[in-house]
Length: 270
Image 1 (cartoon, rainbow, N blue to C red):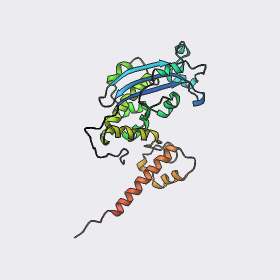
Image 2 (cartoon, rainbow, N blue to C red):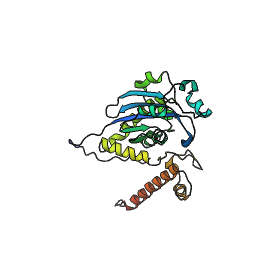
Image 3 (cartoon, rainbow, N blue to C red):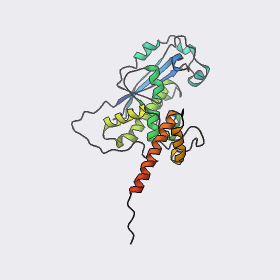
Image 4 (tube, rainbow, N blue to C red):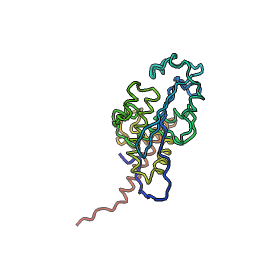
C-alpha cells in the first residue's frame, strides 16, 4: 500500500508558536430525515488534547426537535424516545453550549457540520482513518474500535451506562480514534501545525477509499484493482465522488511508479 499520508522532513523552530491542539470532538443524533427536513435531537462532545492525549470536558444535551417526527429507522438506532425529549432545550439553546471551539472533529464531519453549522476548522476522522489505517476491514466507528483496535479504557466509565449511537458515547469513541490517528500520522508531519493543515485538507477532500463499495471489484483492496478498471471509473460520468477521487489518486501513483522504473538505470553486468 503506497503511503497515503507521505512523511516530510521535520524542521522544528524554537520560536514557532505551537497551534492549539485541543479539538472538540462532537456527534449529533437526528430525526433521520434529509438535511432540509431533519432536526437534531441530541448533541454530545468531548475535548481531546492531541499533544497530551487527555480527554476531558464531556458535554451532552437532548434537543427539542420542534415538531419534527423521528423516523422509525432513526429511533431504532439511537433509541431516543419522545418522552426523553420532553422539556429539552430548543436547538439554538442546546447548540450554544457546544460553540466556541477553534477546531471540531466528527466521524462523518460533513453530516455533523451541516446540521450544527458551528464555525471553526473541521476534521473528519472517517477520512483520516482511511489514511492512517487503510488495511482495517471497515472504517465505520465501531468497526474501527474493534479492528484497529482502540483502547477505550480511560473513557470506559462514561461509556458503561450508554450505548453506540448516543451522541456522547460516539463522541468519546471518536475522541479516542482521533487521538490514535494523531499518534499514527503526526510523526510524519513537519510539526503540529503541518499535521492540522494536512488533516483539515484531507477532511475537505473526497474520501480516499481503501476498497471500492460497488461493481466488479467491490470490497477488493485498491492495490488489487486493475488499472484499466480505475481508468474506466475516472472516465465514467455520474460516478461516486469518493470512487473517482480514489481512482485518480491510484492511477497517478501507478503512472509515477512506472516512469520511475523506466528512468532507473539498468544494473551493470560483468
